[in-house]
Image (cartoon, rainbow, N blue to C red; front, side, top):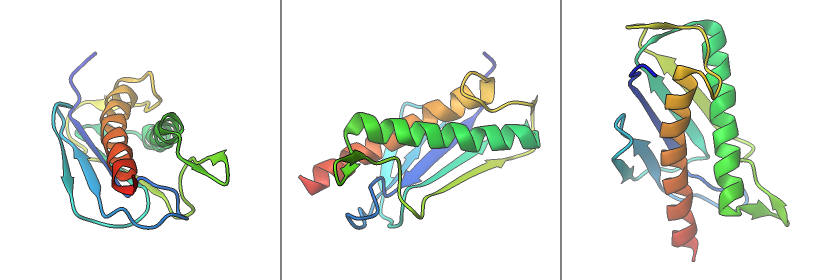
Length: 137
């Protein structure tokens, strides 16, 4: 798999009925470092890919990021009224591309771009959800 630099972050990993968590998680491209900074909002997932993405790849990546968010919330046991939460009613997913480097046609989870972005987002969301749950304990 070719090296594709990507960064992903998420803000307020929680269900909308609980309230703000005041955290933003940013995963560095190396996937080795995740840092917390103050913020508030819903579960806003943002990915920046250092590549030239075709329109279909951008759409695929939005779907991939949404799937990652739902998976992380389910694994953490986040629920509302006894039902697993998959997000909030005001969540946003944003994918941006620098337009530099390799042209990529796909963004699904087994594509080069999808794998890298999903990994970065999973790191960011997992850490953010864990922190949110600890803050509520």
